[in-house]
Image 1 (cartoon, rainbow, N blue to C red):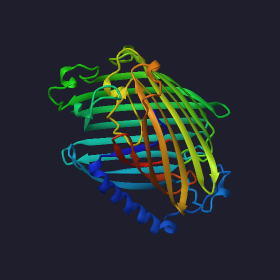
Image 2 (spheres, rainbow, N blue to C red):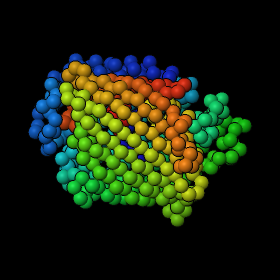
Image 3 (cartoon, rainbow, N blue to C red):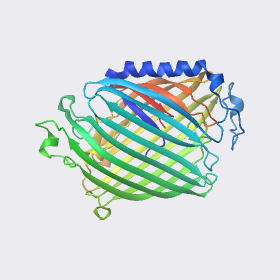
Length: 387
C-alpha cells in the first residue's frame, strides 16, 4: 500500500475541465482565507520549523475540518464525469491528525468509481491504522506486459472490481513501527475488445479472479508531519504473501520497499527525495496486480510488469500565503526479472504544480500537478503530496 494520498489522474480530454474546477476552488479559498481559518488551538506537537515560515495557518479544532472538491470532466470512454473528492481531518487520540479521503465518480455511461482511504493515528501515535476500500466499474486499457509495448496494441475493457487493503502497525522502539498487512480483492472483466490477448485468455488474470494476502510491515517514521513533512525520514518495507489457502486463486509474494527523505531549505522550501522498489516473485501474477511505472507523466495502465523501481526529487516552495508550488524530476524502470533492472532503459519524467493549503498544523494541501513523460503526459489532482 502506498503512503496515504488520493491522487486522481485526469485524461487529456478532461484536463481543461479539471483545471477550471480546481482554479475556482482555489480562488474561492484564497478570497476567504481569513474567514475559513478555524480558531487557533495549540498543536499537540509544536513543529520545530515554524520560525522558518513567514506565514501561519491555524491548527484545526479537535472537532476536525472538511474540504470538498467537485470533479467535472469528459473522456470518450466514459462520457461526462461528475463527482466529488473530499478530505476530512481530526484528532482521534493521536498527536498527529487522522484523515479520511472519500472519492465518488459517476459517468453519463453509468460507470462508477468509489473509494475511501482512512489514515488513523491512535493512542498518542502508538498505533497507526491505514486502510483503503475501493470499488470500480470503469473502462480502461491494456497494452500488454513490459515497458516497451506498442501504443497500437491497446485493448479496451471494463474493470469491475472491489478491493480492501489494511495495515495496522504499533510503535515498538523509538520511531520504528511494525505490524501486519492484509489485502483482498475480486476482479471481473467486462466489455473486452475482441481479437486481443484478454479475449484469448493469453495472460494471467484475463478471466478475472480473487486475491487474498497477508504479510508484515516495518516502518521507520521520523517525519514532523504526515500530510506535508518538512524534515525527517519515512522508510517502509511491506511483504505480502498471496496463497490459495486464504481463498484467492493465485500464489506469489509481493514486496514493496520505499525510502523518503525531507530536507528543509529555509524560507518555507523543502527538498523531498524518494525512491521505491516493488517486486513480485513466485507463481503467476494477474495482469491487473502487476506493478505499474508509478510516475506522474505516464498513463497508469500504459506499462506494467513484475518488478519496478523509481526515484523522484521534488522541490516544494511557498509562493504567497497559502499558495505554493513544486517542481519535480524522476525516472523509473520495469522488468520481468530483478537482474534485468539495470537502469539502462529508464523512463524519465519531469513536471510541476501548484499547492493550496486547506489548513491545519499538518499543512494538508490540495495539489494540482502536470507531468511529462517520454511521449505521454498527465494532469493530476489530489489531496496531499505524491510521497
